[in-house]
Length: 167
Image 1 (cartoon, rainbow, N blue to C red):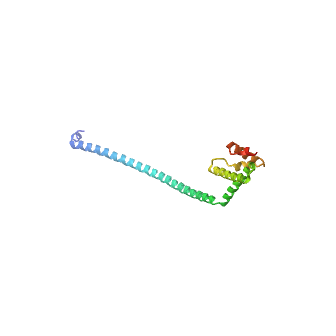
Image 2: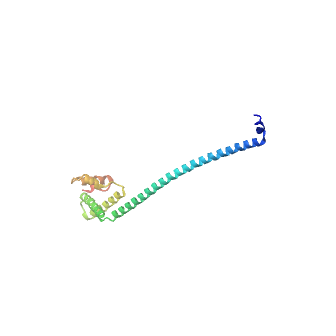
Image 3: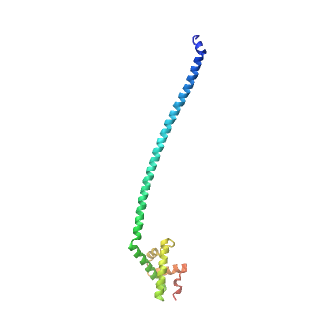
């Protein structure tokens, strides 16, 4: 081992060992960085795939909702132009006015117009959602005297004149 002693005492050997040590540390850092870079690339690719899938789904849902909105807009437009709906509304006004006239019989012409206007106002309120539709109750309680009594009771509760003027 005497031949190794001058080699270990040489400055060149110590410089070479220190240089190799730092080169090994640099190589190890480079390998770690590349492994981490590959991992980040994989994560970024996965994230982009997920976001692309979500974007595609959102775009499909947006197109579906746009089509649904257009269909509903057309349906609402067609129901507004429906003359049958206007006729049904007018018949409902006349039916309610007739019920009021059975309660307030004297002075038919003036009472008829007042009952017709009041029925129109009620129907407008129902369409706005401020009161329950009375035609539902009329369908359930269809007997001859019951609608008159029901209308009279509803009017007396709301203070609309009711059966107190009957005479």
